[in-house]
Amino acid sequence: MTSDAETKPAAAAPLDRADTRVRHDTGISGAVRGFLDRVRSGDLGSLPVVVGLAIIWTVFQSLNPVFLSSNNLVNLLFDSSTVGVIALGIVCILMVGEIDLSVGSVSGFASALVGVLWVNNGWPVGIAILAALAAGAVIGVLYALLFNRLGMPSFVSTLAGLLAVLGLQLFILGSSGSINLPYGSPIVDLGQTLVMPPVVAYALVLAAGAATFTSGYRTAARRRAAGLTPPSLGGILARALIFTVALELVVYYLNEDRGVPWMFGLFVGLVAAMDYALKRTKWGRSMTAVGGNREAARRSGIDVRAIYTSAFVVCSTLAALGGVLSAIRLASASQQAGTGDVNLNAIAAAVIGGTSLFGGRGSAYSALLGIIVIQSIASGLTLLDLSSSLRYMITGGVLAVAVIVDSLARRSRVSHGRA
Image (cartoon, rainbow, N blue to C red):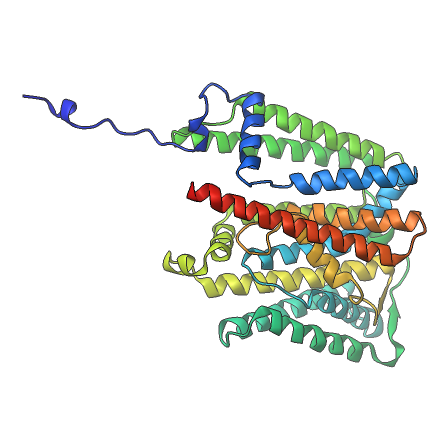
């Protein structure tokens, strides 16, 4: 007669991909091996854009030594912030598998609204900016209603919105066509001259490094509590130290000229907040689920309509904020604001940075990396005194490569999943 302990099968330990590797290989070498495993499975992350950025910088620096000068990099950061904020909103809408073609027009309308309310009507600048952001949110709600209630594809509704909002921009600006914002005002100085004191910039980098270590440590603790293989404490500390030292060197180099722009700091702060929201909150997980499989998300209890609404609202609101930053960067609001390549650059930045056009996969840092790539191309060609036509062709080529890489990586993930 056998006992219960002899007849019951042993409970299987929880497994994950890391458990298929050697358990003691959790140091730096294990982290490198895990990274290579993810690359082979199609999870490339930000690797393609980092490699592409290194190539772009190497080429332009070899052609013009001024390109990587601290002065030019400070200007690059100033210019990246405006469209970068718009691209951050595009990341949100792409995460749910939709698109917003009107972000350029919304940004131009917001800049015009700030100019009219602040300069022409005498409103306090803070109230004028809040009104512009509220207008952007209302536009997003309208798109969501058309999508959720009437089933209008986002491509069509936002294309119509592009034309309608552009008309609103021209209407409120009137016959003058442009409004100059007051030079010397603190808000205009933010977009043109204000930089962080060196001690503040260094302290913020240290805080970012500490947050990186804390996040990694907590992730390891959760995996350990769940019986999964955690990364080693040494590996987490090494990554945080490398990250911190690298950024401190960048800050030191930028401080050789003017320093880190406050406006770029605002952009990075928004990126960090959005990254936390997408990765650490129920809303962010729902965004990923809806973008991955709408019907499965609905059956799991997610309010799909609310998620789509939030994506449209966040996208339009950030487009309005980008327009405000563009206005203070140029110290003017005009009929040309938001036109030209603003719309396409914002979308291209999100895709080039690594956000998938197919939905369900992306990162807030896609906007940061992607806009630096695009602005680096624009800055390098300007220094070389080459035609803007080349910038369009090169940016288009980089965008095409990014989409091809995304498609191949997606196909690789599908094949590995079937295997």
